[in-house]
Length: 325
Image 1 (cartoon, one colour):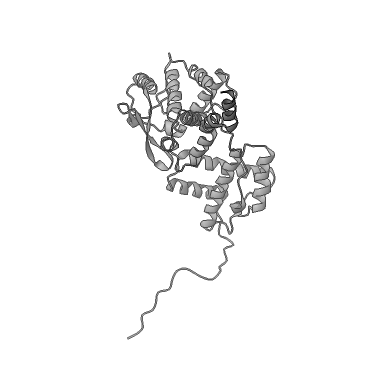
Image 2 (cartoon, helix red, strand yellow):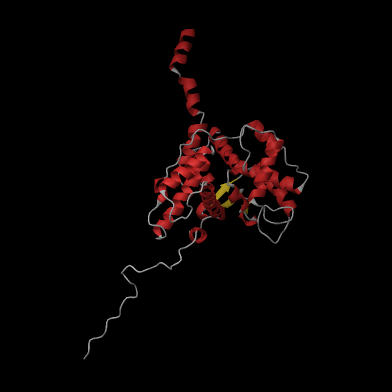
């Protein structure tokens, strides 16, 4: 009886000539990365941000006549000609750090999947950002902002409702525009909000906000689309469109102390919540933060408790009051 022939493996271990193998282009590598982001269920806003940032990197390197092939970009190139370029342009630390983070994630993906031999972005470190620079609206600025939408029009009533909802709940702009009519629970005065990573949470709102929502729903009427906030053409409201409208209301209200954007409403909500005596744990649940780090920063920046306690128990003031008795 003859011995059975063992089947060979199809993988060749020896180095072969790959001179004629086409390497993926930059666009193909970006496409693979964005596809992986979709598989990981990242939001469309995050995917769009990654796409624009990677093309910004290529644009910056080409402008400086540097090699822009992803498999040939070095750590020195990223440090001197990308980070250095953004520092020279005096971009905001938050903007720089966001783009550096995108590069780290992208090049780690390429290295992990064998598209590049080493990860040139591994050495990139974030620039120091001022932790106390969280701009918020004052009470007077909020009053002026809320007076700007013309509530005798559909778009004005919609925008007024949106401003109230942003302030009362602190939800992100993407979360707000993803709301469907079915996400409203008017009897309980709560929203079902789909946050980052498709995590759902229930966020409460109060009577003034509920009144505005009811008025808006009455004008919105029944529509085939389920998006809560719609345009004058009965289409889902777009992020850019809402950002522009809120910015315009800021110009009309003559607000210059803070950037008038949906995210400033989020910071303002946190400030007012903390200063009104709200606890950081419930604020974390409302805002949808995965950890307490950001909420603890809000407490550190906005809490009056330490100052008020010091006013009560200052040793020097206590001595002075005893001398006056």
